[in-house]
Image (cartoon, rainbow, N blue to C red):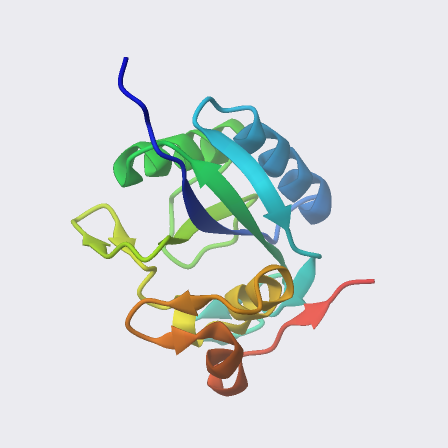
Length: 166
């Protein structure tokens, strides 16, 4: 029997359609139920304006969280698992910057750097997104993004707004 080592991965979850918080809660439960994934930490919910190349705020605001998971999965297998959760919760992939019932991004897996057509780790824009950095900072203030530096410093310069929900 081969021993599989668990790695810590950072996932960013967001929703801007329907009952956003309930959908995110369902996604966290679904992730935690998958063999090879266990949710270790979860941030508070943060709200941020939607973004589109034609301008900000053209769609409903997003609710975002970050979860830290332990996983024994390889990166592409983790991607398949999170996409299966998205599909089960009604995610449709018709527009690149369209509104979403749920969006789950793999932000980082330890210090790993991985690049292929389907998946780039660390997420190529995480270092500039407040809606990723602020919730991540809440659950892991000493974290850094490989190639970009400490998230505490990155959050000082990132674009956009994010507000912690009560």
